[in-house]
Length: 69
Image (cartoon, rainbow, N blue to C red; front, top):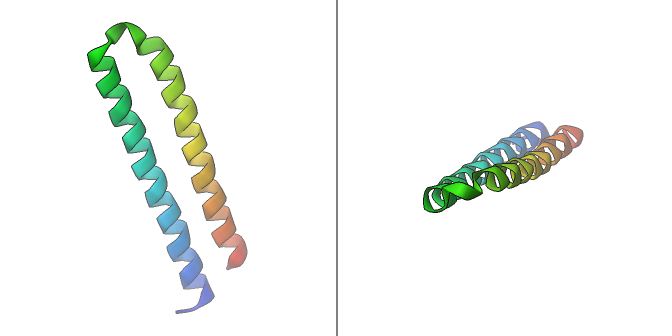
């Protein structure tokens, strides 16, 4: 396998990791809102910030894979 193939595999793994992370954030937010509906505003803000952090880490992984290739 060439270095380009390995970099593409790494970029794909970064994206899959981000998808799993955002899914877990969404799942936890929905469970918390089901238990305490009055906290929905604060929880939504926190979930969006956490999702942005997960996306930033995934983007860093993709950019690193592109630079390596």
